[in-house]
Amino acid sequence: MRKVVAIIALVFGVAFSANAQDKAVKTIALEQTSGEFTQKQITVSEGTYVFSISNNAVGHNVGFVLVPKGKDLSDPKNHIQTAYVKEQVQTGKTVASNPTKLAKGEYVYFCPLNPTSTDNTLIVK
Image 1 (cartoon, one colour):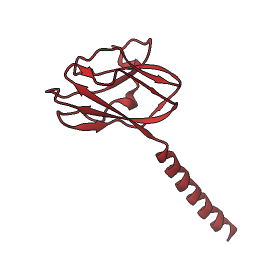
Image 2 (cartoon, one colour):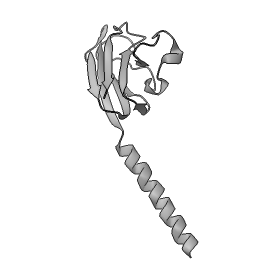
Image 3 (cartoon, one colour):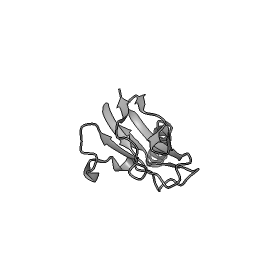
């Protein structure tokens, strides 16, 4: 009987722990217009984030790339791949990334499909 109670307690503990982790995920909403992100610099605290990217009348699909500052932006090995949107963002639509854990530091974000500048900065404190 003690084993059954222990197993039930373990199952509930894992379920509540997973639910608490889900609530800890925050969203960073970014909007792209033709040639640029409307938000040039964002400051957030360490944590897990989903990037929600909106395509506001760009006229073609857009994407999202996040790279630690100082790394070669053109090398996909340096991209934080969990931050990629799950699919290209069509005009008038919004698409999210997978949850991405961000450590303290500075990151650069840009769109490889919409020639946005590469001086957009995400600061994690």
